[in-house]
Amino acid sequence: MKKELREKVWKKYNCKCAYCGEDLEYKKMQVDHIEAKYLGGKDDIENYNPSCRQCNFYKSTFSLDQFKQQLATITERIKKPFIVRLAMKYGIISFKPFDGKFYYEKMNEH
Figure: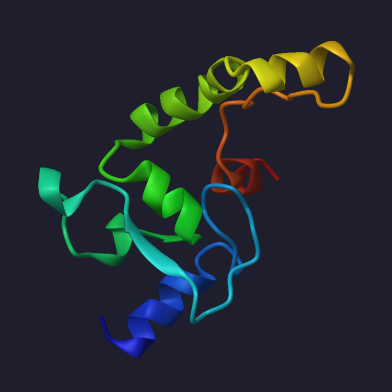
């Protein structure tokens, strides 16, 4: 990918991950294909989102809706191990469920 195009992707959401909103260093940013190339997505700026490594890895080839569905299940899935349930019981940790919106969607609301 040419540097100019990569820079446009990076600046698309103010140098933040389109999904979680984390600040992205230019060199560490990963370019996510919104619709995976594997599933017919195009190599085009409209199909690119700036992403942190964790979001890009977890999203993988999911569509945006599938990715949201996966994120929505994290709270329940993470509660399954015994140590986590015990920590919750004693108030050591608590969880906030995924609100169903990516950073770029919240940004567009304002």
